[in-house]
Length: 541
Image 1 (tube, rainbow, N blue to C red):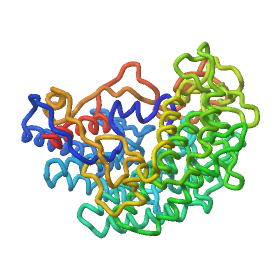
Image 2: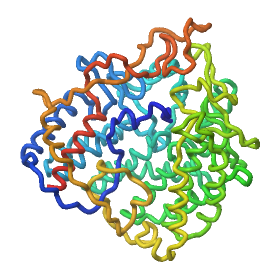
Image 3: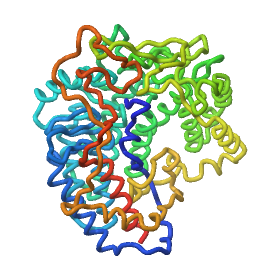
Image 4: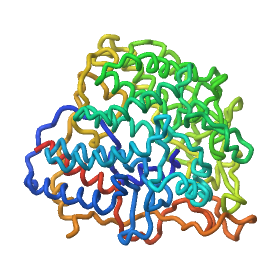
């Protein structure tokens, strides 16, 4: 559950998330490095990451050059394997893409190392947590009891559940990678891991169609007296959408009919969870019993949520393109009208005109603040004051309501048969695209008549990436985030200072924060970005 203002998108520094592409666009007429030079550079960079940086095939996000400290979303151990993007599944996908672009077996072996270590960290139920520890259970519990416990704003790490999560696409990213690895060479160990995670996705789905954030279900962490939110039906961070994408991929490639009813129920859950008038939107989470908005972290109150509502509107239009069923469009105008009704005056925030949280039953904004200095003495609270809100989770959003209206109007005017042409549900089986790291994946991309292209690299882009490699085949980059090392638990009383809108509290807060003096290191995000440029150059050669 990434924080809105310092998200993995920031950490990726422009790296595209896993994506689906199909046709190859013609190469632009431009001077470019020879294919052999690109292949050699990619191979050298991959060898460094696999043989010098990885933890037995697993990865964290960033590493100091002297290896004295490492981080995923928080500081990691030398035995940590991080799942969250840009972690181990993304690295595996990059290696598999490089294998497809070059044919060099080393890249497949690197992808296999990533897949094999992920199998070691697969929960017995079939899913994955945010990270796991090659040193075993005692080591990961020590991490949660020290570093995790003291991350003030990273409440999802403050308690060790010992189960698996859908948050931040952790399980879905691993599931897609296992599917792709199995389809590559039909190796039995990847089929076993794939079957295990598919069973997890099917078993964890509620009858109403939604999924909890974590599974197997727990009721353990009642932060500041709030309910344990991890069993609530979760829309936040595209939990349901990512699971639907995975199930659609399984249907398209394996033809496993078991996934069809879960896909249908998952899409129907969006319809059923849309709230009645006068607030026809959605929350980050919804209760299972009555599908009402529910609270999550202490700075995510029980509320209707503007960006989640806009995301769900777009997803329901995707569902219409998959099925042709009007129920997915019928109430979308209500949701868009409601979003317009909560638009703020430009005097509050001229760039982001929609409040993140809207009070259930009152239609008034709920702005998030905090007081104190760390996880022990601090707390989050909400009120109606838009000033001095927390920086790491914005109280304001900027959904493009006009674009959503335009898409809805265009969809409604087209014949149903035309809208559903190429639907992943209506078409036959087909292989996955060859490249997964060159664009954003979306439900709408999963069509049997996909026309997406890989655009050529910009002039000089590949040459610049090659030139940036050092003598050790590394892309050394400034690491723009850091954290306080764990030394003790938080203080009983606040220390002097104003931490109301900083990314980090006092010196006991282990949350990451922007480093005012970035130091050089190795970043998986930068590696993935640069490899993507070179893979693109090879794919469009």
